[in-house]
Amino acid sequence: MPLLAANWKMNPTNVDDALDLVRGVMSVARGHADRIEIAIFPPFPWLLPVSDLLVESGVKLGAQDCFWEKSGAYTGEVSPEMLKGLCQWVIVGHSERRLYLNETDEMVAKKTAAGLGAELGVIMCVGELLDHYDEGRSDEIVSAQVRAGLALCSADDSARLVIAYEPVWAIGSGRNADPEHAYKTMRLIRRIVGEMIGAGAARKVRILYGGSVKGNNVQQYVELPLCDGVLVGGASLDADEFAQIVRVTSEVYGQR
Ligand code: PEP
Image 1: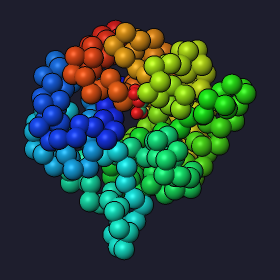
Image 2: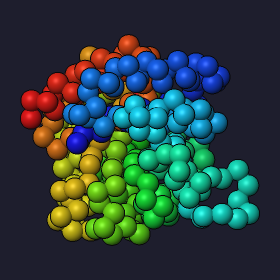
Image 3: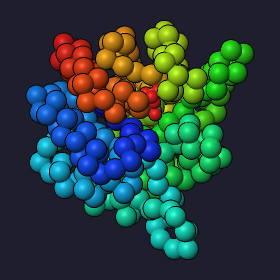
Image 4: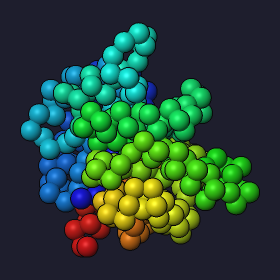
């Protein structure tokens, strides 16, 4: 089933706005839950109230990050074990964390393995910077990130593993990637998954596109043969815009 993941980043700043947004998502999700999996990723403090509201809605819940250890002296960190009862999903390796918090491929690999080990679904994000793209180095950068990120994974993990291809220059910039570029990179990612953890896994792992996805451009990505959905940031904070993304995605996959 395709996945539509809504990364709220560090928004909204109060719980009432978060719950209003959840109500908007739930009302649009109702008619489409049989065709697409919808998961929302609010900031940590809103996970508990949001999870209460989502009960029996069919909408899944995820965290925007996790640590790799189960417990211990790691001030400020949250383990996958702690998320497990609350969430079905976790995002790791988002470019904003790689960029502002110096997360390395090795850290992303440990987080990916820890999330999967706690039986969460894991969305591992990869993507090249604008300089890399301009220099024609997208394949090289993305390949290295995928290889390093999967270093601790096995084929058993593939049903709960998602890789989001998010060119960093497309995130929050309004400059969404050319679908042809997205397609070629997603094809490359699937090939590397096959090399790393086997052909069966390469079929099962879902691959998303992310980067300035909106209601008026989502169709060109979800129509791509190898695309299993989208990771949406800014547009997921606007209930009407997100509803449009849900409707278009559901229609495209309904016709497959
Ligand atoms: C993201 O945060 O992963 C993202 C893709 O953001 P945006 O849709 O705003 O580009």
